[in-house]
Image (cartoon, rainbow, N blue to C red):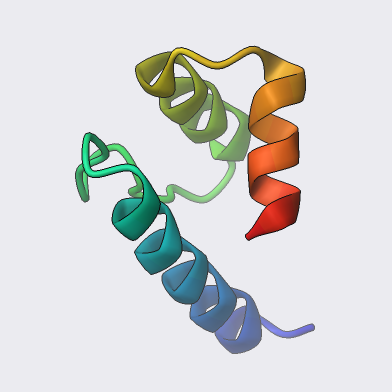
Length: 61
């Protein structure tokens, strides 16, 4: 997968997350190169989910 495909998939996933969880903002879902884990932790915390619960949510989308 190239960078353009990854960016497109993230944009799609981001839209699904925002639709499913209205509490998430664009800032929560902002991806920064090399900070994927930080972003995912921030989303998990804001949703009040455990790591396992959050992984299931991500897999379901």
